[in-house]
Length: 33
Image (cartoon, one colour):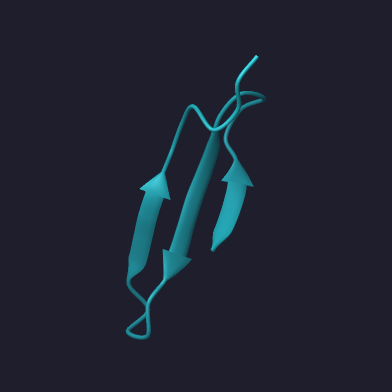
């Protein structure tokens, strides 16, 4: 699984399957204050 920061608070968490399809697991609210 990979992740990229969107903002200071949010991250995009994703992976690629064997057919190079992008699977998105979450795209915000990754961090809490």
